[in-house]
Each structure stands twice: as C-alpha cells, then as structure tokens.
Image 1: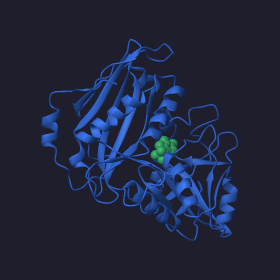
Image 2: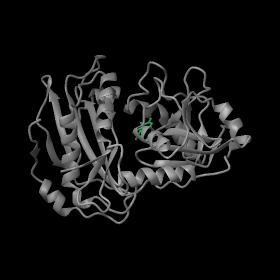
Image 3: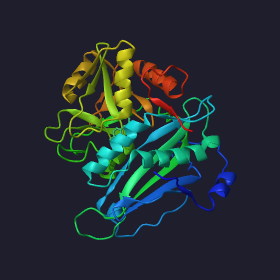
Image 4: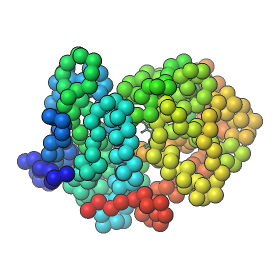
Length: 352
Ligand SMILES: *Cc1c(COP(=O)(O)O)cnc(C)c1O
C-alpha cells in the first residue's frame, strides 16, 4: 500500500484541538479521520482529513440497504511513549469476514492498518492517559453507489474515525430478557459486524432503556430458548465457580474481548465452558444459587457486570454477587492492554 495523502487543514485541525476534561464514550470526536475509495475494481490512495461531515448520495446502498460493516478497537497510551493497539489484526480479519458476508470488497490488511495507524499517530498527543482511557477507533466500510437494483455497489468507501474515551463506566446495570423479537437468525448476518444487526436490535434496546434496564439479552431465533448475547456485547455466567458462555454459532458475533477473556480466564486457572446455554436453566441456577454472577464483555466496556436479568413482566433474577470475577478479569485484561502486565499472548502492538 503506497503512502497516503494528507489533506489541507489537517495540521490546523490538530493544532486547534483541545482535549476536554469530560470525554464520555463517543461524545468527543478526534480532529482527523481517514478515507479511501474503492472504484474501478481497486482501492485508491487514502487520505487523512480533518474530521467533518461527509457527502453521500441519498440513494446510496449504504443508506437504502444498510450496505455497511464496521469495527471497534482501542489504542492505549497509559504511561507509554507511544500508543499501542490491542489485537488489531483480529479486528482486520473480522472486518474481512463481515465484508465477505455482505459481498463487499475486502479492506486489505495494509490499508486497514494505514487507516487506524495514521489516525492514531496523528492523535497520539491527545490520547488520554489515565488508566481505562483510550482512543476508540471506528473503521467502517460502506457502499456508495446509488440505485435500487438489488445488488452490491460498485463503489465503496473505507473510513476510520476516532474518539478519545473514558472507560465505559456502567455500574452494574440490569438487563432485559427479550422474549419476542430476534436480533439474528441462522443463515443471517449475526456473525458479521454489520450495521443492519443493530437496526434489528434498536427497538428492544430502546424499550429496555425506557424500562430502566441497560440493554436487551437476545435469545435464539428458532426456539427463543438459547442465550445469544447482548446487543453489542457477549455474555458470561459464573456457575459453581466456573465460567460459562454461549458457544459461537452462526448468529452470535465472535467478540474479540470474549475470546481474550476465555484465554485469560484459563490462564488464571478458571474452568471455562463454551456451550449452548438455555435461558430458563440459567434463571433456575440463579434462583438455586448455583449461578453466582453475570457479566457481559466488549471492546467499549471491556467487562460489564450485570446485577440482574429481568423478564418482560419485570420479575428479576439477581445473582448473589456482582463484579467479583468480572472485576478480576477486567483488571487482568486492562493491565495487559495498557502494557502494565506482561503480554504472553502477543496481543499488543506499538504504533510507529
Ligand atoms: C462488537 C460486538 C461485540 C463485541 O465484540 P468485541 O470484539 O469484543 O468488541 C459483541 N456483540 C456484538 C453484536 C457486537 O457488534
């Protein structure tokens, strides 16, 4: 991949930018972004631009048909001279699989890294440096061609935007069991990180929030019996001291945090099970005190404790503990991500 261009205005945008005290998660935009176009069957030279509005055709397939896949990953710079990325190659591979599922062109590894590294290194001096803070990177790929004919676009754009973020501090929220609607079905696009999956989940997410819960817990499409995951996080339970998580299938998003926790937990001596998990069995195990703790995981929150699962009629199932195993795993993973602990798995990579 040849070098990229730097648009006029980038230096001034970087010069002007002041990192606010309050960051939230996604409330503050990094001052630059990366953009590259696919046309005539190939990727064109990319450009680093000042962050700003983009133009899209109203009839573009990204808008009309949700021809869009994305990724989410973090660059950390806590007590380090240079930022470092966590398992970015796995995000790149997952974006390839997502693009394949939607029949979009693949973003080659060199272009993917050019995008995330150009933004990260331009923003290096704004990456907040307290433990838990980071630069959240959001690469995405979308179809730009207008037209209602049901086929893929012939033109695409790959972009990377970024946000300096706090740790996604959530407390220990409650989660609403979604008994009726479905996020992803076998043969669908649930395993792809596609915007359309979120579209399917938004109504239940909003309804959960309105009822005072944080997010919905999804069940399988065929029988509504097996736990899948939350709208943007994978799910774990501690049962008789052992870790259980739904086994990946053709509807669950294979989270990189999920995979990291499975590896770390085994390393820390936990017995770990990946298996089909029935919701009603789990609720019984909570009542009978076999299930002592629940949590969810994803790049944003890392590990989010769950205080209770609530049925549609608000009956709540509350395990005896919150944020014990979850806190231990979160601390271990964050120490590794921030390079405060040795990285026996080779997960971190410094940005030049
Ligand atoms: C992104 C995502 C996750 C978490 O994946 P990570 O790689 O751990 O960030 C889980 N579920 C869904 C539906 C997602 O989109």
